[in-house]
Image (spheres, rainbow, N blue to C red):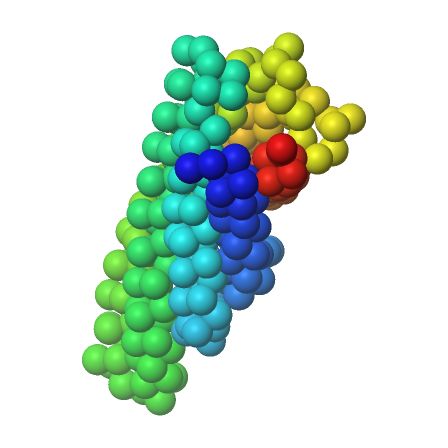
Length: 233
């Protein structure tokens, strides 16, 4: 892949994934607790179409971004760069797998809402069905949270290694006043701290919000580097 193609995939992919992530979070609810299964199922049912679109954007965006990131290998040729890229790619694979749970929750949400309607009308069978769906959704959501956390840790380690590799390297972004190495290190540290410490000490929700800051920085890093590579003569 040439420099222009690498820059385009690096930047466009992450922007598409970020848009999808925002749509997903808005639909589920930024303030929805990760264990509030009833709300998650209801919101998933109400916003099923948006969640499906968001999932597609996230999956395709991450795949395209992964291709661009892999194509940058050799920019700061070192063991740290190779390890960093592999860790980030592994995180992307894990994150993509969690998107299947989002689609599954939409299907469960439709059935849950219908069952709750029957339960409200006094249908004992519908009430039992709602309870069963809730339990299944709880396991699905637990897998999603666990996998996302693991992916966040891997991504944090990956960006930390990439940042270490880029330190002192002459590679620049479109925002040349922002050092790519130090920005990547900050991104990595935020992801590691939020997914290991904040998740345990505070809450999954707080960790997710802090990880969102790292996601924004990753977008800035990728777009800045991507534009610089597109304009590279």
